[in-house]
Picture: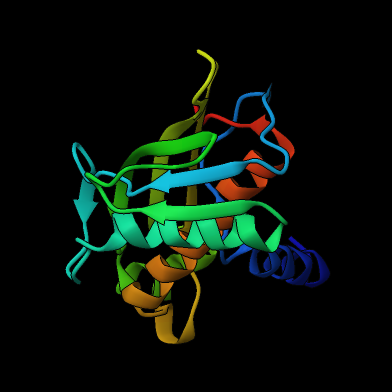
Length: 181
């Protein structure tokens, strides 16, 4: 490989590193909740694949609050509801966290540009209309694999959580839902 080609390949890998979506996604399903009240219920940790040394018990409510805040930024009336609480929205968002993985700092440092050691956060759920039997499933996962000296797992997982919340809010706002394969 020529030196120019090697530099171009390295630049491409560097540009693609960082927060990325996870596995390939299926085409969207149409379902919209324009301007309606939306309640986002705390996401469950039941059945989640967890490989993360820092506290994670509050992630379910945190991601619900982040999704609700993103929806409010997009003009919706949205609130986060703790588990066991009573949702008041016309549309209810609920689900479970599927993965919390802090990854490996050493692997990120030595092979991060190839996705090695990436931190990961994923969830799945659905939006349903209270007055109908309409249900729109969704899932999302984000990976983060760069940072100084491989990046610190807590900050990388938090970056993934924020991005997943933005992704889910965008799906709800546009009515275009994705599910990971």
